[in-house]
Every structure is written in C-alpha cells, then in structure tokens.
Image (cartoon, rainbow, N blue to C red; front, side, top):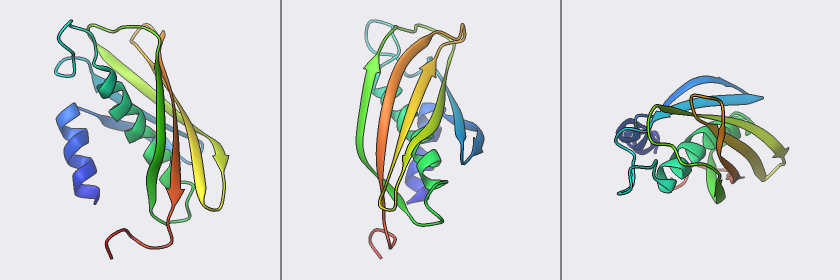
Length: 128
C-alpha cells in the first residue's frame, strides 16, 4: 500500500518536509501539475492535500492503518508557477476517525486552497 502512495507522490513531485503529530508540511511543484489554462490543476491540489492530511491522520492512529473517507477542497486562488506548500493540522482525533485541515499556500504565503480530510482508523490492514 505504501508503494502506491510513494508512486503518486513521486509522479506529482510531492515531498513531505516536516512531520509530527501536531503538524505535517508537504510541498509540490506547479510545473507538471497544470491544467490546460496553465493554472495548477485542482486535482493536484487535492492530491497534495490528501498526501499531507493522510500522514497527519496516520500519526494520530497509534500505528493502526488509516484510509481516506472524505476529502473536500475549496480553491481560492490560481497558481501558475513555483511551489505550493500544504500544512496539515488535526482538528478531530477520535477512536475511529481523524479529521485534518490542510491549508495550501503559494510562495508568497497566499492561501490558494483549503481542504478538509476525514480518515477512518482501521483495526487491520486492508486486504489482509
């Protein structure tokens, strides 16, 4: 399962640069992740948000596997170049779910997207 996440993160150019239970930071280049009008693709925002949010949720789960249950994204500002940064922080830590807020910003520290990810905490690894 981890291999699949690493493959997508690698394809998108996502790097997790800081992680602890209170905050996860990840970055992604705009180049290679644009839509036809030259703006960062909204789906790329979602991938970055889920990548950072999933790591944040996993750090809350006492080693139990977590899987995405719901992701919502609000796109505030278009980005044409540079790097976007996602900062994920937990807003709810429950026994069976973890909800994380993810704020994406451009290189001028302007908010470009706000996302919320809810992950389910599983008792066993999926497919085992």
